[in-house]
Length: 145
Image 1 (spheres, one colour):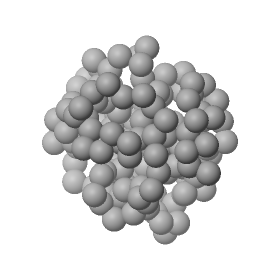
Image 2: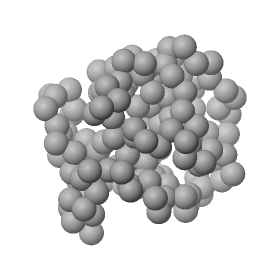
Image 3: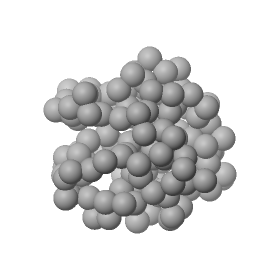
Image 4: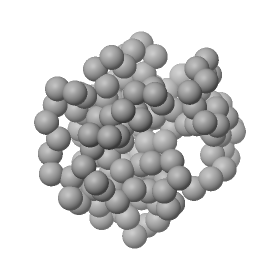
């Protein structure tokens, strides 16, 4: 099984980053943009808004996630090699309190940890402990039961 690769912008505020604390998780591999070299991503799919939804057929592939603000993620996405893209099925709601307006749909604009959790769960990848440190875990479950 391929680890999930997370490309995090070096300017990401780690105090606000929903993925903080997962850097040593065995199913995840963090890289820093723009300093880290990207590995071979030929067996990976990238999570991207507007792409076809994830299915169990995608499970054998690795998952690639860009972790940054919406504005920075758009810039980072331009340097990522062409990959198959998938999205999360519609209907999930975020529990993360947003202040920025860069997100196209703030209620559905999931935090990185929420998107990661949903993707791992849909693909039968390790997900049970991903939300353990997420402050809004119970709100997220309540909104998405």
